[in-house]
Length: 131
Image (cartoon, rainbow, N blue to C red; front, side):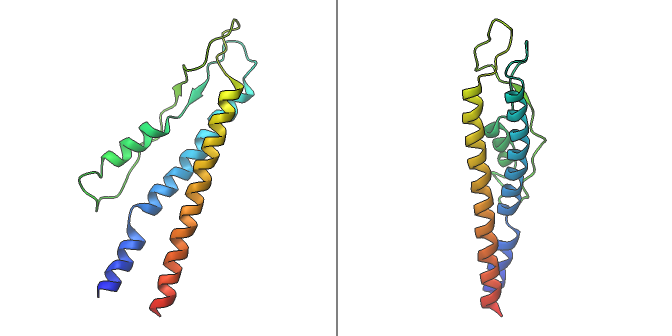
């Protein structure tokens, strides 16, 4: 029936996989940012990052022409963050910038959690109404 087809599409679309991947990525990035902050005073330490946009775009590009395909992502690639100014001790970690990244990353994580909760609440309601 059309309602069954709609339910299957809602349950098996790429949304849950994409949000799950976002949660995993955000956790990994949190660890990288925390390591940067822990090394803010370490001589010659270079800040690192996991660029979100490049990571997500690579995965989404694979399904751009085939919406029925499952989204798959490569492991995110850590890069050196060259946006900070290098101090005399060779360290380029800027604690303020790292805090901003951490806040944005936490917001991304919270948004993905909220969207997953909404997705499953919607599915639960559809199942309840279908009985």
